[in-house]
Image 1 (cartoon, rainbow, N blue to C red):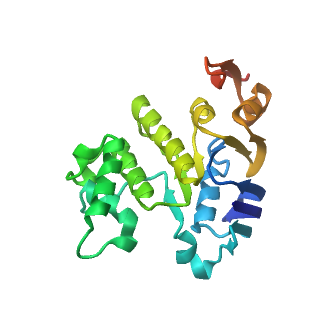
Image 2: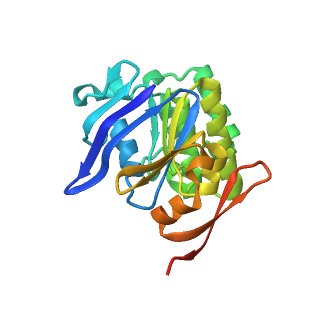
Image 3: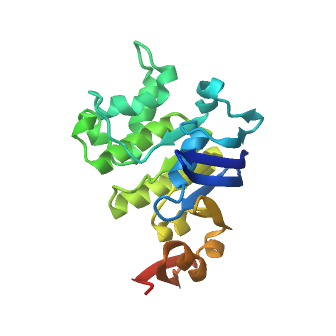
Length: 255
């Protein structure tokens, strides 16, 4: 279990997360929702150890400490929003960096096969020998996601992983997230802006505003018109898909 205990994050004079308490369990996908500036990315960065905070972040019996960040991050794969890189590497080499601990002068055949297989599953195998800097933003996102999975993490932190992807690649990546989370019993926290996609692929949603959790629970519990209108300041209609999941339709700004 990953636990946040009275987590408060400040950036300068701005409090971006305030007194957050939450527990995240293996085998489940938790999606952070909220308007821009709500504290979603800051929460992931604090968990990973990129932002200082007050309170505690605990995974199993280990509490995050600045002096032991390398050990803390070992079971974590973190995919930030910005996938841009200036590295003069091809795409396969970037994916292989997910297993820095296993890399040496010789890369094992098993590790190479694992990396190539992940790329094939994400439909980017043909990009293996293309320079990473020559890829589109969406292609880089897929490569960085393959790198994250190659780490064989216990905790997966994904910050807007589908923001640059077309519809087909969004579904492919999120299906892979769900399958990998369940198969390997990961704890997955991701940030999404598409509320309908979040409803399809999440076990629980956490809706943030003003650095606080405004609602938490199943998609049907959180995606309620009155809650979303208050947080996003737009009028929202909630439809129901053929699978019984909420579909969020914003249709005008409140006057």
